[in-house]
Image 1 (cartoon, rainbow, N blue to C red):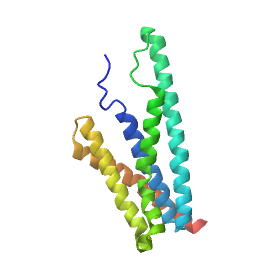
Image 2 (spheres, helix red, strand yellow):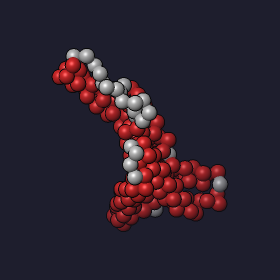
Image 3 (cartoon, one colour):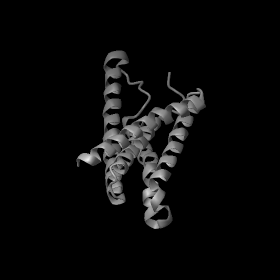
Image 4 (cartoon, helix red, strand yellow):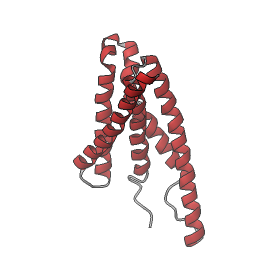
Length: 176
């Protein structure tokens, strides 16, 4: 039996969005903790955004393709697999890049609006927290679970990852 089309690629959206925000904000937090320039934050952030986004999408494609092949070989000899590898990869990449851009947005806006330059890391932190809450809420709603619990869980996981990156950047600043 095929799944309902609504939410069919939700796991890829959630996976890509959460990882995009976490890894991009980890770069921002680590670079900010090390007191690196905004230019370095943007270079590292965009390199991560597209490089890691592409890597995740390709990995998702290969994983989905392998799962489909295993299902075909061992179950029915007729593919009843519900997801298309190209679509899972695109859902992962698009959500990774769009939602993953959020931590960088205040650094980009600071180039145009110098008034926010001195608080761009604070704004990035706030926007990133809102992104975690949004993605967690969407996940909770789509699986008909507790939206608040899902949002808080996503925020905590992302916050821990960001905290680790900031502390590592701060500690390594003294060494480098």
